[in-house]
Image 1: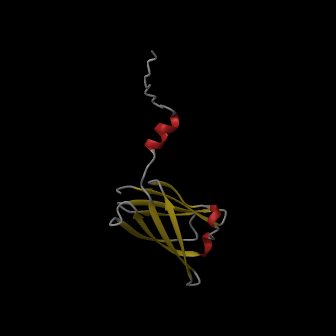
Image 2 (image 1 turned 90 degrees about the horizontal axis):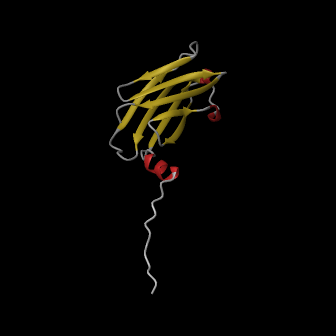
Length: 123
């Protein structure tokens, strides 16, 4: 007579734990760039982290052409939460900061191109 039994296998690989630790929040950022020539452009960015790179060199945005930036950030999991801020860009400075009780954004000039990092604080 043969005995049969079922062995419970628990997979404790690094990938199993890694998936459980991922941040499930999604954020949409809409940036409206007002240029010195009064034209405006929009950039929409989706991020799954509360902090990171918002604008990179790949976006190819000329720092010296930007006068103002309007930023709207929305939490996809809770769309009622919406952050709206505005930043004036001073071309003589290498950077500009947006400090709000919900968000911190640093815009800076990297060899003539605009880059930005963000940190969501109270979302």
